[in-house]
Image (cartoon, rainbow, N blue to C red; front, side, top):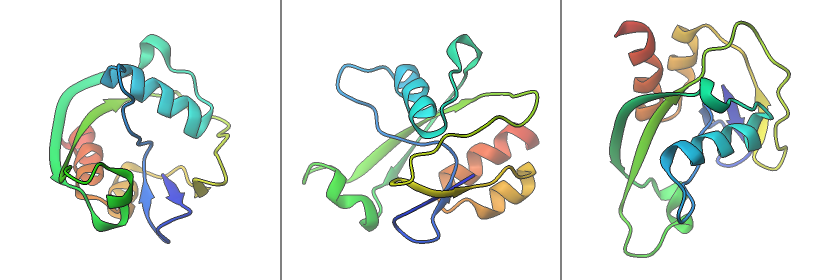
Length: 122
């Protein structure tokens, strides 16, 4: 889990926005690399699930004025153990390797929590 620099105390797994012309998979691979330094390639698992949710006020400035909802696509990467994480200090202040139950509790967004829970509770 990674703690964002802004807003304070906002914990999340790797997340990010899809760029114009980018597929959800390409965006997930790019965000994973940018936020952690991990290159997943074909190991990235598409969970074939997405959630639509209202854009939270803390993030409104990042979206077009007429955009009120966001769509999140879920991906997972199984690692055999911990990896060295190279995080961007402007975006994330801290990271923690946690058991899935604790990661789900710490997740600031319900979609992030539900994605973690879905991996382990089916």
